[in-house]
Image (cartoon, rainbow, N blue to C red; front, top):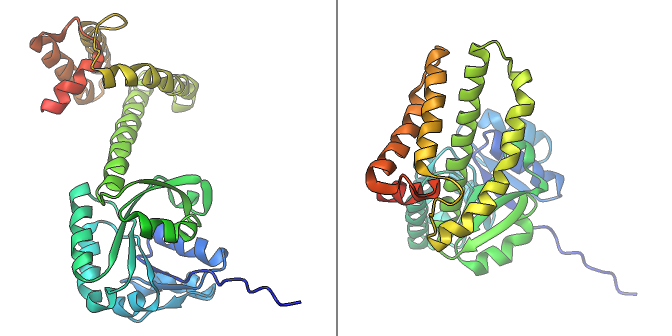
Length: 294
């Protein structure tokens, strides 16, 4: 019987070996891919080289080694420095840029790579390094759909893939609005914990109550999202004026606890401006319009 030829797994170049980049290169090695790596500080590649990765002598050599090039860098300033150093070696490459920055800078990177004869796929990783290699983790992608579909199987070695569209800025947009929600929520929890501790309640004592509030949020989001989409901000369930009074009570409690009250003061300012604009009897969802105009 004829032997079955199993296609080799796609070789990958990973540039940038911070915790995320090392996790990505490691996931590819674990999955049986040939991996070429480069990092400005070459010592960071030691553990990966010991596992079978090839350390390229420079950026251009790293890019030239494989068609698929994954960037995991601090921001797009670092990305552009890599592009400048790689130069003509980028022609014919698909650059999967998993670095974080603004949607417009992602579009700029796509334009620059197109001028060099390369394709840019933007990525926004919704996972810490510990989630890399797990299919339940997810990454936003945007850019040319043909390039995404052609390399999807290899990209899904890292995380699940959520393709958002052709616009190279979309993946970063989705990522940044997720980060907007994440950091605002986390800072809110930390601030509430500071108030709790100032009143003799430990973080562990507060935890189940904080968790209960966080667990209720999906229900609020599911209730409000269709109303926001429909532009329905009637105060039939909640009112801006009520929200302002509540936030002021929080602010007074914070001040009496000797804790920095700038965060609830910021919220009170937003509610206060909405009341001043005549939305006191509207739902708190009307703040979406307030923020949009700002």
